[in-house]
Image 1: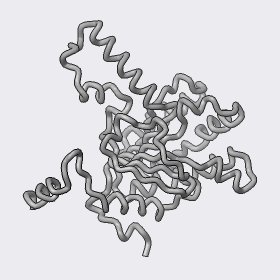
Image 2: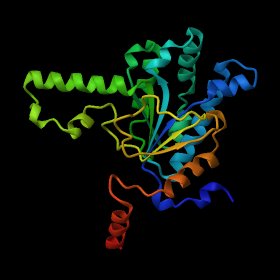
Image 3: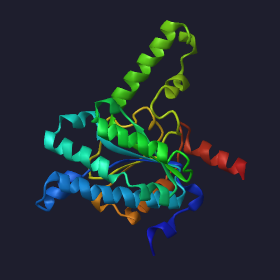
Image 4: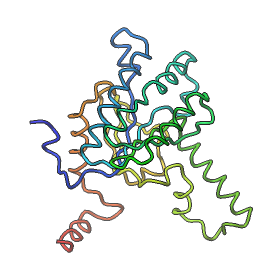
Length: 251
């Protein structure tokens, strides 16, 4: 029996975020350059994107390149930029009716990459099954700092009152303001940390860590993460008893 047959299809997360870790170590275990692992990781992206669309996930956000990744060796960064250009295949988006969006400080990226990203966003703008959000040159520190600057500018200009600022105001100024917060965050590769990814948005997300390297992350492994999510009780600060009572009242 495949794992997806064990899923409760009425409780598929609307938004799943993934930290795709382990490409470099996967390649090194095989005596290859790190770029070989990134190439293999692209196949995993295609695999999980297609499966997400089939399962009914509405938003899939992938941590692709952080602001800190600019400090990696120049040849690896160059290889990653080239890989982004070649991996944005029309078939992936149009076959699965997937919209493409980018979040992050793309001003730091090569013009050829930015142009390809914008073209793909425009070309897929009318696709409705799922939105694939790629976090490029992204970190929560960058995102929240930018939001604070934008809010401060509006206050200075007189278009926003200090007393009107609340958590909703901040959420509206984040790069992710077009989608709901993720219900599930998955990290592959065995590391047990968040790496400044969607820190504001994952306040109530369920976290799932797996030792599987990203290139080896199969559809079954993905479904296993969702099954684990479905086994949990999401409390949002309430007690388990309160949640159960609310369920009984809604029956």
